[in-house]
Image (cartoon, rainbow, N blue to C red):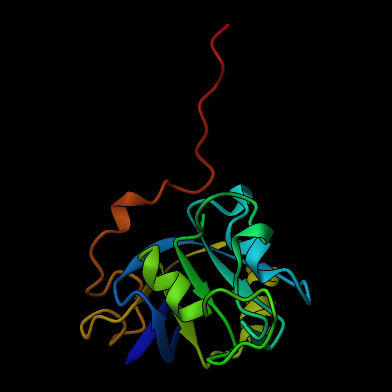
Length: 163
């Protein structure tokens, strides 16, 4: 099924969906590690973010809970260049697709993750939506047809400590 990544700067990236087929909103951040995608997915520091992996093949050794940083994925969505459908490792218990489906996390593959990483590095973190909806992503405007943006905290707003 087609899935689209819509970024607040107007970038619209079509791809192939895996995991849960739903819309998820978050802050687009990247990880450049060559291994450890299980740890990244379950790392509490990525809570509520849309994680972009720069390494081109993700999922090739499957998933097993002994390598998790927490009991479940912390990311809102997962963006990869290529998601492996047939992992090969003696400890593998499930595929990346099955894991994301089990925890209701959408994924998008077939994306030029390195170009997106450069965009994030140049502009800083960006709000985005990963969606399998047919209405979200038809326009290059962030405000087009995507409901649910209000669930994201505004960028740069913090509370001052009381004296």
